[in-house]
Length: 422
Image 1 (cartoon, rainbow, N blue to C red):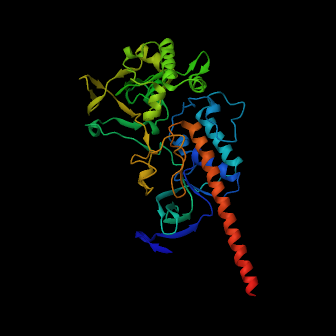
Image 2 (image 1 turned 30 degrees about the vertical axis):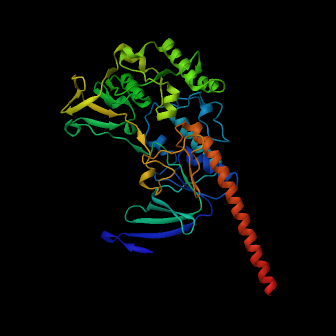
Image 3 (image 1 turned 135 degrees about the vertical axis):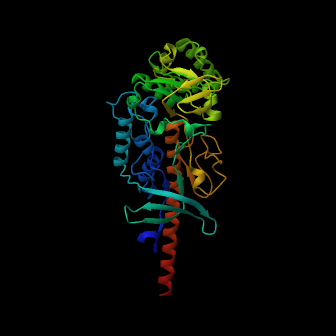
């Protein structure tokens, strides 16, 4: 069906039945589910709003980024990293790995197709997923409605950037960049840069700015756990995973905090106040990831990265802090994180909360009702997403095969009735 838009362009509407699940998102989570389904012979469609797989990694990360965890904790199901990759692959190596993964399992997402809404039709017991597909210059757009029995939400916890409101920011006059658009400190040489946020991104951006002879001040608005990346040559994360086999979380947290104090010293005297609860318990309770130090702390100790308190307001070329200090600055980088965009298009309120987080905690949060699934919302990183992807693919595969068996039985029964009537 064609309808006219302004200026003589057109958009058309189509309705497509999918004999399998629709997967929303072609990041690592969506690819992992697709691979699991491929191995079971289950057909599916992956819808991706960007023009490539893993768009967060390809388009919204800085150049120096590496995986913060050893590669064995970041690989997707049934496809290990190449042996010649380093323990902590670079962003470009990880993208190469994901491209190889998609090729290996013959996964071809529908790119440039944005989901507008997904709603369960109680009458027919099916999902209706409506999308808009850009048709190119002068070609208008194509609206598609997919009908399916299963829907997999794999759009991730980091689909949209978070940009807080600050008084006076519009009158600042300098460059304001979110971390998702930051690539390198090269363009900030010699500049006074305010980095808002002290998580892993804020720390690494501040370090990168230092390495390019910029002068960063890092805003620390709340408490933060800073842990050494490695302990005696072993990944701190790997050590924590090993201890989880034998010890309760509270005890592991005590050990990690003691090791952090032993290796990094007292970071509170530099303005980095530790939370009252341990790093693993905080991660489980609030999803707040501890910072793994990759060199920023030494720059903080030397004064090359200045730690400052929260922001009161901006003015032309300046920022006033909550403690009354006023800084002259040239640029601002907002390392203020990301959020899920699921509530904007998924029309249900039982599985996801209003902020786009799963209501049921890991490891039982991957399955909702009526064929609804989620992968990549565990706050457990790539390893948690992989575990959920395996569960989702197996569950859908089992349901799909039962459905095919029932259809075949139904067709056979009708065929026999026709023969008997003849």
